[in-house]
Image (cartoon, rainbow, N blue to C red; front, side, top):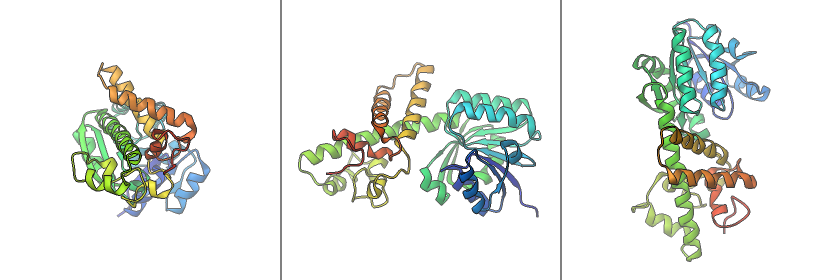
Length: 301
């Protein structure tokens, strides 16, 4: 049986490992990225390099896009829907604004293509391990067609609703994450000034009412959670710059529906300040350094 062909557009820190997992699952993957280095690394994992986005989509049963922003998705999809065969499944796993996701869906529908917006959670580690969480928006038919592809790249799949629902779920989830990380960082910074050890605070909070993912899975200080970026010089699993992007998307969405999100707004302002100080490429948990009042995001006592 001939392997199904998948086009993959956007082979960066997330897209590259995701495409590699599709290859390992037995798909023939044709990939494109504007970065020659990304193309070379993907080719080493078995991805067939293509000379353009449209070339990557040629003859594909499905096309996955993993792009920086809504404008890129709208532009690429407007070209894709004119080039692919009607009935082709288009999957966008970028994190973009809800309106752009809906526009992309509409362009696909107008040309007889199936579409889902399926942003991910899990960071670069999850992309490499194939343990991502996918939050999907689109028709039940499109989601059913996409399931086997998404399962090759992730562990948890959720059909959140119609067009744009995946993006809505992603930005709401990451607003929670940004807010909770700041709270955990503030608690550790306060604990330090009160003479409390990191381990003592972790031991108490991790089994008490302060328990949350930002604490137990991604603790922002070295020691308690060995796999957290705090133990690796705050090299990013998820960068502060990307957190700021998601928080700004959440604020834009809140404004569009007149929702009140004061903590989300404050989190966005704090991450904007952190990025402005030159720490956008550090892990988002490194904001503990700024909350301590120090110049270095990753500095610890």
